[in-house]
Image (cartoon, rainbow over all chains, first blue to last red):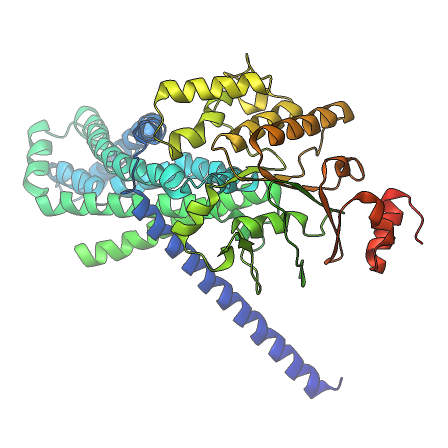
Length: 272
Length: 232
């Protein structure tokens, strides 16, 4: 093969790889889109698995309480200290309550709750469903004419959609407590001005924004976590067996976290 | 391509054994029959119905007529033996809890699993897992039962026990059995029809003695290797 032919060969090989990768991404998006559709339809199918929902609520919701509590307390305390340091430069410590509450309700509450739940429950859901897939348990459900979406996926969707907004509310309240601890009790900001600033600045719009964000993040994290586990055998480069579940679980956590961060910007830009 | 121009029929109420080496596409045939995989071309007929063109609901209805024993038993890790066996009854029938309890208890007794109902799959031996898998597969009284490598990983005594169990349950329930296995030639003792699969090519026999006389060289070679018989 002479030099020009070699160049053409390399060019075509590169184009081929690009086309193949694009087709894979399109197929994957289609697969995940169909998965989301069936998971949402599964929410309305009967018989409803109420006990499974309670089990998932206990695991995803109640089980995440402690990690949310400590993350919120730490974030609130840091916000209190940082806020005091910055506002003190302008003699505006009285605005601390306003700064802490707005930051927590509109931004940190929804995003940190989603990231914590992704790390704790998203990874677990992905691994559980992935193992069920490779050990043919999902095939067994289909062979018994049991809809795997209604039986397995949709209760997880509902539990996450209920838990994450509630955990976000817990995060906000505990974070405010943390801000109060450092700002008022440690740095001596006036308690009345802390609460007054909070009351004056937080509007229904801000709370609504926090709630919308938490619901969207919940949907993203449960969709990606369960979807990657469900398609564990179809994900390129994942390998086989236990290794595939491990790789896909890592991928699910990374993808969920990145999606949450991207959607955080988009929602802020649209809703602010 | 795993399977190419594969064509055969399964006689009703009898046992068909699909045998061949690993990676020959035996389990793929079962997944095609169940509609878990769709072929690139061709038909898979169950009675008059073509599985390859069926919609979701029709496929669900059809699958109610099947029972499947998976290679690894595919028991649900988080459910007990009792819950595993009761699952198809709870999900697919309108039976009361008492009726389900009685039916599962009877099955447990028949398959000598009484006393193990509260155990989880991880606490069971390989043979017991197969028996629980079989119990679950038979709960909806299927017309067709598919067995995917039912004796893989079992010792010879347990393998014999499982074969006896198949024979007993089939005689009692009269289902059509399709058994995929590489346990050659032992598995042939159960067969009313043998399908040998090698390198995408297959041949059908009424009994094991006919295998070395196949017109297909691949099959004769396969028989010589695995059954130690002379090629005529």
